[in-house]
Length: 122
Image (cartoon, rainbow, N blue to C red):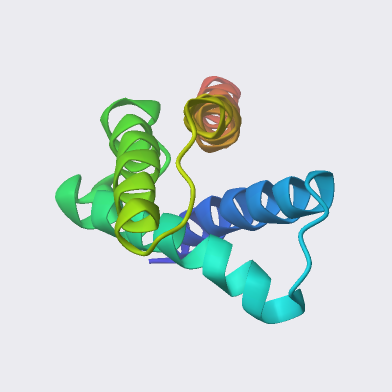
């Protein structure tokens, strides 16, 4: 249970970083409501990925868990942005794929390496 909660927090932290950095880079005003408007589609996409991939079973796995969450976060997030009247420019999709791929797959890769190191030192 603790692994699952920590993994969910790590994925959410990736999304928070993505939104905060993106809004700061593009002079995003609107305070908390602006943050929430940008954040919710990706959070919903990530949640869909967790459900589709049953990520709670092995939340630290890069494949399939990380890949499913990453792709779902971006795909569902962009779909929800489009239907809610928010932008989905090609450059934004590419940046989203890169940033969220590096962060969501990256923390999982580090966790797997740490797990292997711990297993070999026992």
